[in-house]
Image 1 (tube, chains in turn brown, yellow):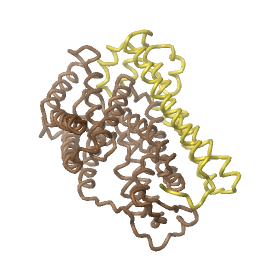
Image 2: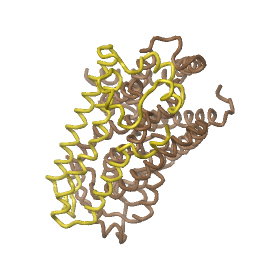
Image 3: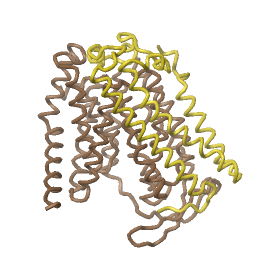
Image 4: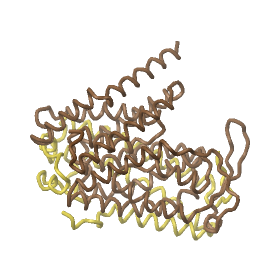
Length: 330
Length: 141
């Protein structure tokens, strides 16, 4: 009985997702956004129209982000900037707050269960958060010059992320034969215990210097586009540096709470966070994530993941089209 | 589960970090929901009328601030009694939690003489405090 109910809600959420992304609501939102933008931001609707639509939209985003195993921020910025009448500055500011709130809510549990490694996170977080500040300032500066610069770069980045998600194959227990000097000096190592088998795996990292350099790029992109950065953190920690997959995922989520904090402050101080946009987004995504976690056991995650990759590619192309003014997608 | 083989920051410190973060995050989210209800229900008059926000949110941040006469940096504190800027209490609490949690790591690293990580923690606090201060890019508006 319970299984049938859960399956019903899974199917319902998938259909709602399809409705949102496939076209009617997306097209409706795009059309309404275009009308709104032409005649002032929200002309023709009561003030609560867009916050309410945003709340529902983010709820669906939260459900499918969990099912697809991606962060909410990476879906939020390209889709909301594509379908809603808000300027991309405010979408990026809200995107950072969304990613930050999600990371802050998840972080304590990961630390309490000792899944996230503080020794692995702290050096990476310092580089990423300092660069996120630079990225946030650069993004706001470029947007002031011409928002199409940011829109174009965002589109190209999102399309790149969708390809990365399609191609990347994580490794549950990467083999690290020799710990490098930086990792050794920082003591980045631990013992991972598989809860299913009870078996313990000692882990350490290598290629730490390359990892730190990549966190420069990750930080800049996270700050510039307000994306969160789980999509990049996990491959670097897992595939490049050799941390076990679950440690990488947990540490990445914890890292976001630090990286996004620095960029979020820049956006807030510059006035690029509008509560009317940011708060319904945060609440919608958090509620959606709670439902998504419950649906995770019965949903066909691989199908949803491919659907999300497709949606991301589409959203990236839409942003690129808008930024370059090609007019292919209207 | 990951056991740290280098145990300068032992479980109690990590647990303290987690507990403070958890309480702060949930308090921030709760405050955010309550203050948003105050804003949306019109219990407190906003500094910028909601219709003005809606009619200008398609503008870039620079033009939006001019059109709505909104503050930058920490100037929102002076307007915290208004329906819209009261929302920044919850948002700012969420953003300040990491700095508070990092501060709890200073003594454990200092006590066990792990000066590399002590330096990393202090540098991180400096970066986050600088970002929060509003000094960066304050000349932009």
